[in-house]
Length: 62
Length: 576
Ligand SMILES: Nc1ncnc2c1ncn2[C@@H]1O[C@H](COP(=O)(O)OP(=O)(O)OP(=O)(O)O)[C@@H](O)[C@H]1O
Ligand SMILES: [Mg+2]
Image (cartoon, rainbow over all chains, first blue to last red; front, side, top):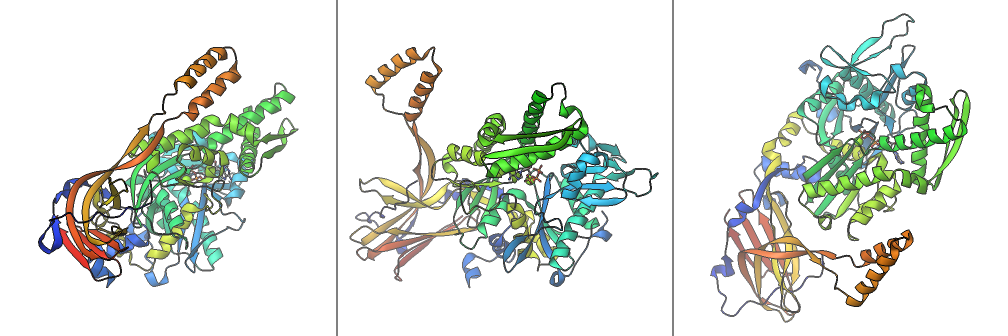
């Protein structure tokens, strides 16, 4: 697969949305599958900590 | 077995090592200054044969026990790891013909060996659990001797298809040897961890195939590696194409060579001669992983006759072709099982002893595209020794978790923590090619475990201005381009094929020609559902936009788009 990244498009004429953000679909629920991650490695430890303390990424960063 | 036997060392006083306990070999490793060191036992071995032997009441383990396969096979126990936690009826004793045979006693797989010194002592009936405990005691004892402190705890690697019964039998066997099992971890993922823990490793989303080619089994696994989290997507297990199968080919080859010089004497018909042949065949095989030639030499092979021969690598590769092709097919089958294509695989990790074989690695190199990284000693100078990968991973994991209470480790490995949604479509942003085509830029790849957060930096249009950030789902498919039909060439080829009928050389040539015209296969992205649109306004000329996507546990998606190096940003949420 190519690694060249082309530029983003310019904003079409007349595009408008509240706070410049327009949600279109919220369908990612159907696009997920339950699987099991292996409880191994440093990143898993961080995941387990976040999960067990119900923390988000940004709370974890602080 | 009983709770009473479970060692419970204080986390502050643990000495924790990594252990691999294979059917053929075991290894021990310890982390010093964040680096895993594979420990050599008192014989100087890092690959320690999983064998126990009893001679006049004395217990031998490892290579010393292996050597006794020639003179003392009945009191030597080998190839027993896979019997732990299994019914006698369900085991395959193929590999135990030339050593102590498994029997059923007290409802469990057992071995009868004379382990007492007294001349007239009855042989003992030892369960496979007891044999394992004795072996692990020796193995861990070697680690304690090396470290200079008593090892209290271990992380042990197991195949991905180990049942709960096998896991608990292994844990009990360790506990009975006085060792606390911190965690049982999967063999292929331990190998991945060994590579990911290298200081030069960069954290990247990768699709990995781990080909673990061992002595009595070959296990191939597809692992999605996403932000340092590992998910096994598919696994295949094979008991036919193995290191032992290669030894068998060499045994047969050299037995026939011997019989050419000594008609009528088949060294395979005598147990002792066969044992000698097997040991030398394995040495010869290992030598052929390094050199182009190897010698084969056995004193008094049969009827007092010495035998010496040589074998070159090319010949070895020819007679072993079926096994080598079996390895490749196994890899192909597991990729298919994961519903992936060879073009989806970023990295192939060769693990296990038979992975040292150069031809095995080069066959895999031919299977995958140029861009796939094949990590084997013969293809990558910086590859880690395939025989040490799993134990290094286990030692690193032991080092990571040794400070935690056992209860803490238990809770973290619970399904409530490990079973999570994985996205089945990639999530990314739309860019525009010079010809005006919309092109998908992946940000969160498929099979990423949730929650997940990723950021990419994409250029704004050349002149800057107001920019559209269109968040979409994406999927790949394999685009196949058929070669252009060349009328003239094909007619001349037809003529050639006709000519070729009675000549093998010519037909080979036309095969090659077909290969040249092979169809071109490439992976291309297809843009799917639009999830959201956002605007970043007034981006300066030549500016860049950082797009960050977070998928939360409740499957809500947070999008942030920001002009790089500024405070100019937009943020929005899609509810889950
Ligand atoms: N340098 C080498 N070249 C070729 N084959 C080798 C080499 N080193 C070891 N082997 C072979 O690898 C096999 C052992 O592999 P490994 O130690 O990974 O097995 P294991 O995991 O203990 O066994 P199993 O897969 O049966 O559980 C043996 O057949 C051995 O002869
Ligand atoms: Mg193995």
